[in-house]
Length: 218
Ligand SMILES: O=C(CO)[C@H](O)[C@H](O)COP(=O)(O)O
Image 1 (cartoon, rainbow, N blue to C red):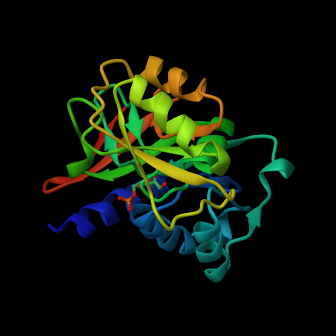
Image 2 (cartoon, protein in one colour):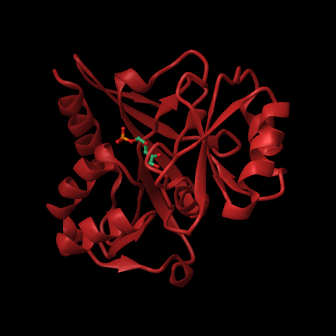
């Protein structure tokens, strides 16, 4: 099985969590693109989606799925998204696609976070994947200096502007022993919009595409 086959299988498996009449929270990335394609096959059964990025909105709408403004939706059951890394505690690093802030917002409103991944994303400890931090542009150098004090090595993601008009610092060489605490510490730096640690609100269910099929971790 290729990595893409595994992503596709995990994405397909997420459909069983979608109830009739649902509004579905939709993440961003290549695994989620498979999910959006699968969702299109059952679009007659759902009300529509809430999206975490302009890219996902475009794809959803192109396939005839209505996308609601999050401000017009009080609550919904399921948010489906990928991850760059995930531990057995269901703590994640996300934001490889620079959509972390909207992903965290949509995930916060959902009852359940269903994480869809291929098995290469499972790690014993977070931090091999550089941790994305979304920053207000004028605060970039200040935030970078503060991150160095926390032991990280920030790298400005050149040429990338987020959907919110901000920039991304990718933080290398972090030893993330306590993701819950580091998520709080990074958010406390003035100028940080969001960081890519999803630990205070991790995943609820993980669907892992493997060579032996899709494994469900509850
Ligand atoms: O957080 C994300 C985007 O901001 C994605 O979920 C993450 O980067 C995984 O992407 P992919 O499914 O393409 O491997």
